[in-house]
Length: 337
Ligand code: 13P
Ligand code: SF4
Image (cartoon, rainbow, N blue to C red; front, side, top):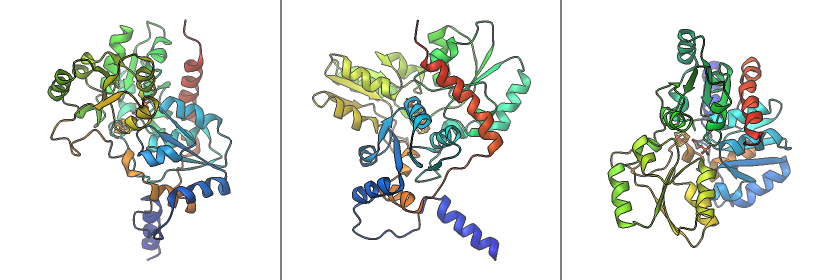
């Protein structure tokens, strides 16, 4: 009986209050701003969050910028408007701070493709390999990695490893293949992919380009090789935003999650941004990440009001997982030659 009550409570809090009634007519913007002040909380949001969440966040960025921000934040509570691995990275960097995630179910197909036991098995088979993992992984995976990377710094991180040192790169095979091409370096690639970036349709993309021949195609490196081949620029979310800001063209076809268009359009209000089309059989027939979009203004408000659900990381795992993240941040902040 007690166990059932505990289980129900756990569900209510960990599922992200899906079943909790919110008072009607609530002004989420006003309430969230009030809670930020009252609780000395900071909201960090990824570019793939819904526009209202990006607008109320204290900082919006790509995975690397969010990691740096999480490392230097001076607040009692970090509210992470992103997915679980991002909030977990913030917790690893701030074990003594409370880290909240509006919906604990906000996962990631890349992270899910790479359980720690399976990566350990690959390591055991290849004991001479150094392990570089994309930040889109669990704390347990980071704890058995030598280095982490994001799409912003993956090339720099791989280049920092001596040429005669074999590398396992996990879990994104598309990012890995692109980095192999960029660095001329063979790596042992994990077979994982992002469900959003794998859903772009090359046929539809080429048709869109045919109708808009003056547009520049830009793409995130989680996209498949045939999509990347068409792109004039390949980069992380912040790299893509920077490109449309600095490139003189007036039209861009953007191959990444559609949430980025909010910040991008704010930066270039007079330019035309066309989202790259997804395949018809894509579950949402669009390029939205179903995990990222689990967070809503209602859940953000409830999570700040109740200070739940909280992200926890086992102490031993936290200590081990911190090392590859710190190495990444150090290498990443060194000047390019
Ligand atoms: P960046 O924001 O680092 O480009 O990563 C995109 C991503 O995978 C977020 O899920
Ligand atoms: Fe994961 Fe792809 Fe969603 Fe990013 S967009 S959280 S990589 S599933």
